[in-house]
Image (cartoon, rainbow, N blue to C red; front, side):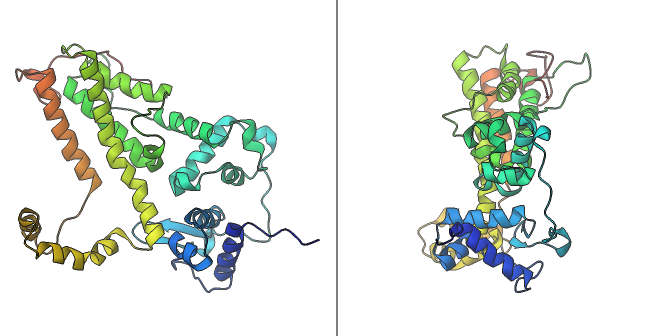
Length: 337
């Protein structure tokens, strides 16, 4: 009887593992991107993604910002002749499964997350995580709720009150941005039109809606503003993981990609069809424009808060500036978990 053949992604991972072991790919060398793997072995991008996920889990490669996926330093590789002991079933728990999944998603993105990958990280049998979660969809919900429990806007000293509406909204938005910065996959867990009904996500809305109470807003407007501020964070944060995916797929850093667009950009600016665009680029000079998500977040948040000020304080009252004015809403923020 013919022996069963390994899955394509395992076969390709084995070939790259051989190249690393034999020195064809040395520590620090870039390994093929997902697009290069797909082209060389004639497989789908999803299969190519699994290849790099396997090698990352084994500690053979690592992602480096603005560079791509490279061979890991020798000291980080596991000894090939020493199998690690499996985690005893008695030591497993739902929390351990969820925390392992979060670690995978933080390092490699949601595309690398699977129940098999979680089992590998926990060094246990492939089916063991299913005893604690129903499957990947359930796992992602648990991951999101666990991460949202980290939402922690700045607390005021005991008895000082929570400050004005603008300060509270800014604290909430910045805490949410920090959360997405720490967990870039979080922005990909669901579309804005299908919000996750999770206790710790509702805690965010509790903080934001509490800041808007007492200003005469109708319920629809108050909730729209809550959603608008959330969408500002999510809309920018979704690009944190996409940039890493783009580097892996193309093998180009963001700067290398921008440089490659030079001829096309020159053709547009010299055509005469886009005078305002051309004038701004010319004014930027030789250094050009660097897109910084943190700067965009700050600019957008300021603009949103200024606009909200015309709704909650149309008379330019004392609470129209940051941190000024009477206290509104509850004295306590959401539980930080």
